[in-house]
Image 1: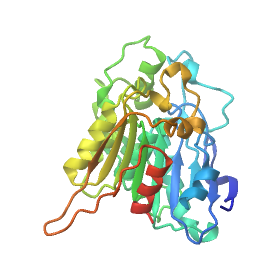
Image 2 (image 1 turned 180 degrees about the vertical axis):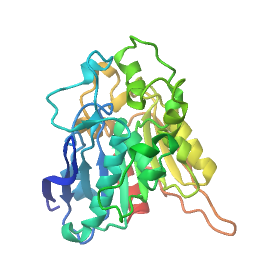
Image 3 (image 1 turned 90 degrees about the vertical axis):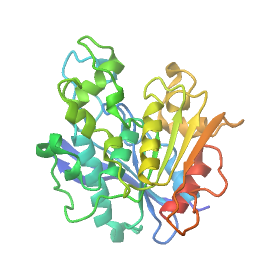
Length: 333
């Protein structure tokens, strides 16, 4: 298996806060489909290098993989999320919905430059983990960044490849936040994990209900939403597994094909205890460990009148790289 071609630090947008960049991994294959990866880190931390081995999976899946940076959340001095904030992180910062604006800009830029780099711009999947899972889900169900909602109408603008589509044809989410309305209003002096969402969305839900709803991917699901592969730990203490349950139920209700893996004994980033969390760089190895983790798999397959079922998976593999490979093969090949 040939090693992919790697191009790092490609600038896709110039922002007032700095350059937004992406890394591109191209398998030795003509016009491969493209996977856009969105890293986790609570919308406030980490970089685009926080990704499961992109060289390995670009080669094994036969997909180009682009890991995109997005503006990270700015945190005022004394904010409850101070421990997550790394002033040495070189990624430019902003405020939501800048994160989403950048992910969509990256997708449009990648479409505009497909011929230059040699991948199929018509076949794009978004894959994200945790905060990146939220942004990937949102990128899947909101075709155009300007459709995010009235609460954000004055905060979204298309300046990068504005004539290109930013729609995606499939979504993979690892423990992504899908419905912020599950998070209770927080009081002043909240703990780090509790104060993050109000910071992200400009205040408590009681004061900004439209922002909390419209930033939630589940509220944008329609029958035209792309198929999704969801993976989430039942014991997740950072992003409750109910987020993925709600998103899966919304897709099923809208007639959209989806597969949801619920890992029984796993916490966030596929660890057993949040104290053991490292990064997404090692997450795939934890997910695909031997023996196979106990898991429940839910599949929603929809059939038109007079048609026959065409499930996303003929035989369901356990959660891990093979499941993702088969999903991508079924949806963007």
